[in-house]
Image (cartoon, rainbow, N blue to C red; front, side, top):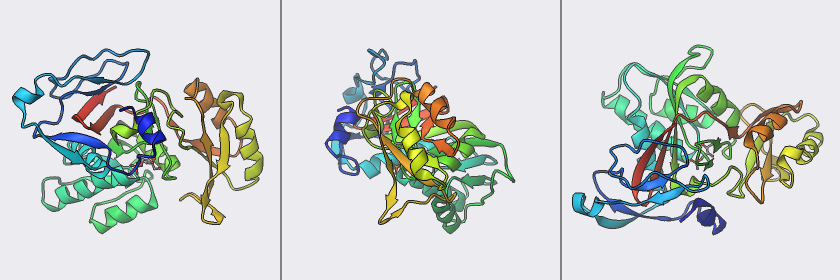
Length: 304
Ligand SMILES: O=C(CO)[C@H](O)[C@H](O)COP(=O)(O)O
């Protein structure tokens, strides 16, 4: 089932996937327009139509795997993607730690591998106060970009992933630090469950966040709303109860909602960034180097 239809049905956070309980987690899955490697693949075809995600077949799976059908929760899928991503972390590396419920599984796994001695000598840069607190509670050595300006790998979730592996991030409010950390990293491993797949960014009809300074926020909300590049979007100040939501950087967020996917994400990103008072936006274009997608057919790895 396509992510957009799952989201339209309000399936986020609920049990969504029928998965196959196996030791091999890489057969079949979703395939984007771009040519990609499916790790350990016995997967079906890799072609796609009209730049959309298509589900590939699981040829051979029943012959080669223990195909016991079980119902996996969305959290279990997030954990599977996160654990796979942590395989990219090696001892001695400098690691960016993302924010959100999927990234939290990766942070927990890093903590576990450090405490049992599998990983040694790593230093991590968190992308939010929440992640910093989680990492501290697990005894993960932390630094900032001031101290460690170049990272080997960053692991983070996303809100939407398109077939070219461009993503929307920041529904958790950490977009600025996430973008800074992920841009400072040699590789960015994005971890999602299949409900995050969209045919075009903005297509989930959920928020595409823009972080703005508090000063004259209404003025900037109106300017965002009237940008030609995001024509037709609805713009709303993100709230936290009765008060505006405030980011870790003491800024506000304007969430943009689209009826249709954004026509040209690059043009939109450029136009949004050009507004004085905009700090950053949730369009992370050409940043993901590896996307790990956990879904009903297992975990697949897409390399950019
Ligand atoms: O960008 C983010 C936070 O700013 C998150 O990575 C994104 O919102 C995905 O979160 P989750 O894994 O909880 O679905």
